[in-house]
Figure 1 (spheres, rainbow, N blue to C red):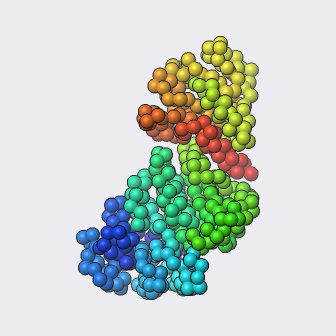
Figure 2 (spheres, one colour):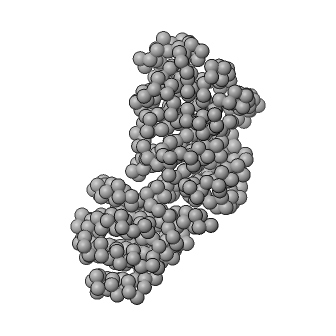
Amino acid sequence: MDLNERLNHVFYPRTIAVIGASAAPGKLGHACVASLLEAGFRGRIYPVNPSANEVLGLTAYPSVGAVPGEIDLALIVLPARLTVAAAEECAARGVSATIVISSGFKEVGTEAGLGLQSKLRDIASRSGMIVIGPNTMGVVNPRVNLVASFQSTLTVARAGNVAVATQSGGMCIHTVHALTNHNMGISKAIGLGNRCALDFDDIVTYFLDDDETRVIVLYLEGLQQPRRLMKVVRDGVSRKPVVVLKGGREEASNRATLSHTGALAGRYPLYKAAFTQSGMITANNTTELVDIAKALTLQPPAAGGRVAIFCVQAGLGIVAADRCRELGLKLADFSPTTKKQLRQLIPPLNAIDNPVDVAWKSNYFNDSHAILKTVMGDDGVDTVAIAAIFWEANMPLMRAAIEIAREYSKPITVCLDSPGGTADHWINALEEGNIPTYPTPERAATGLASLVRYGQVLRC
């Protein structure tokens, strides 16, 4: 059985044992069982605790060996000193994969912690059992109602097409939350923790072959063998885009990352160069990570970097244009034919140069559609950004954008604010039409730039 087949036991388990399950609220072993139940996991759950008869209404077993039938996945939620024996028992029992939630390993910086982690790695190597972690939050797969984690809020994650893999459990949770809050669903999410036996190159290989994943999002702090990940990405990025955020970019952060997930951060300029060479798209912060993932999930890559900007309020168009230039995009020069047609469609006092001012026309669907179609048909335009403040009367422009997106393969992003949630129904409609929508013009430009960048990667 190859690694991808074994990882299916992690993301599509039929049976899960929670070793260290507890009937006491507030304990991680209690939270892990509760999350599985709250998510509506469809398989069998086996709490393992020699001191309990039942946990949350489920029969508890004194040991892994006492559990009836096969076990696909085991969560180990025990003090660090007890995890090695538990992992040995799982391997002897034929458990396919384990997730070691517990902390107290390499990240604590002691010989004892390092020794325990080495023993876990040896068990994985000797038995062929997958060991995720230690020091991790677990895994999520909304399509099968799987939240194998102590973090119950992950149960609100929607099924979608973004795969998330992080070194930090907290960053995994935060990224899933942020995607959920921005109308995005996930295919799968995993916190790799200290990565004693499963590393980024392994999980990216799996996600590249996963039919439910369109975009891969990574958060990492340090890599012991970076060339392995870079090769996997370089070989597979033509199939799916990979977005990466690097934590610990300053030398002063090295100590913090070591105590967090047991990895030295390393020099960021070297990492960034390697990311670029392998074809990854680099995010500078968590907001960009989500914005880029949204754009790459919903829109096709751009054939070039020439952008046309439409605005209902001129200031938003100017800000969008500034940000596009900062990101290396070029404002498209419209052809004489396009300019002539725009002049016939747009009031004489409105600018038809790029950005195009569509005020007083944005409240008419047919006019908006004709204006957008004119520019989308210009061979000198590769991408389009639309920026507007929410006003119900201007929403025919957004209806026209949804229609135009179906007619052309050129990518579109939209800036539309939603004061107090008043435009949420329009944002939902745009994104159901596969148009990524952002609250600021700068973020719409960032999403657009990522589509240009991925287009460049594909052409290299």
